Image (tube, rainbow, N blue to C red; front, side):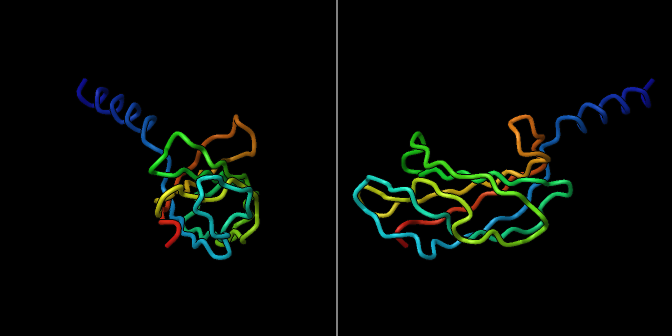
Length: 133
């Protein structure tokens, strides 16, 4: 009985564990200066990835301003072929443009097994930086 209970608990816990994490880093690079609170559509920065989960077909990027989390800057979806570098300009989004002084922005990268909204999430990573630095 106890062995059966342990098996059930292991199955339940195994089915609700979060997807594997991987690492993300970025630099603003050539992101244009902006401080008026009116973001322009700009080219994405360069991203570095590490430990991307096996089976990843696409990576979905999204940026938010941590000082204004309800304002979505958008992001983009890129095909993943095993490279650890996503070059600058891979997609376009509403760039950072804090209205008064630096804000901290967070990029989140979600690894998915296919490029549709029905794709399974395999892992997630995030990185934050201030803009302007």
